[in-house]
Amino acid sequence: MNIIFSNPPQYHIWFCTQSIRDFQKPLSSTIDKVWRITITRSSETRIVLHCNDEEVLDIVLSDIMCEYCGWKKSWNIVVPEIFFHSPGRNGHSALIPLL
Image (cartoon, rainbow, N blue to C red):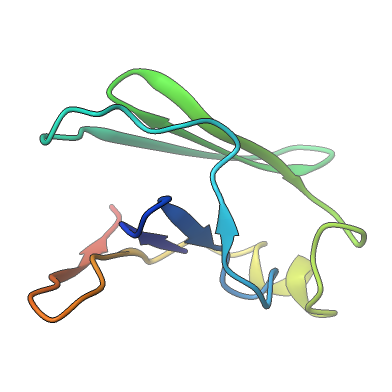
């Protein structure tokens, strides 16, 4: 998964979406951001993102949502990392491994 600090902030779900998408809700305007990313797998695969304790994304992966035909196989494994990216000349990137 990519989180892109553009204006507006956007995200990309690896092995699901081909395009970069805007968040469903605006992010907090504070400079420091604390992220909580929850992936649940039961009868469906759901990704919920919180930024500074505010829910900014709640997505259920499905054949309609995901443009990549192999999404079920790819999202049925442990997600190893999240990629944060700030575009621009002085942009910063971080690949955060998940435990």
